[in-house]
Image: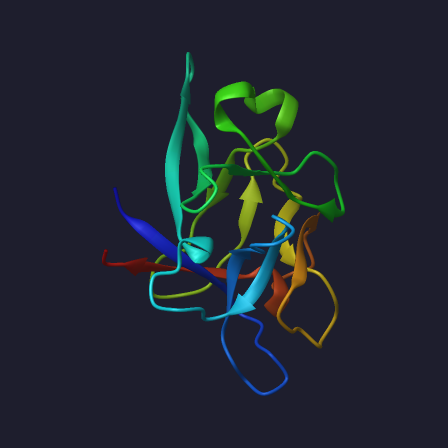
Length: 152
């Protein structure tokens, strides 16, 4: 299975690239500058979510925790949940992405495309900044993401 580092278009004040990360102490979904090569806290596997109606987006499985990102509430922090004990409708854990490995694009909730994966804040992003499911802001740098394939 292919893993990815997922990077928002926003960067730190010093221009460093950030990555979608699970904080190893708190297990919170945050952004962080690059950790050691192929650190599992920053590796994600998109897995198609298939039900009786076919593919319904994909879930993002973190390699360190074996948990998936869910957005239980609008305009609030995303959380990690165990994929074995959830349903997509209850936990809102399926996502859409129309971008590529070449450009940044929105990462939207499958069931509510007004809600996008978003780095909290409005201009100063650092390590440990929380990640939200937040209302679309028309291509702001903190709501655009790029999937970067990682060879393991």
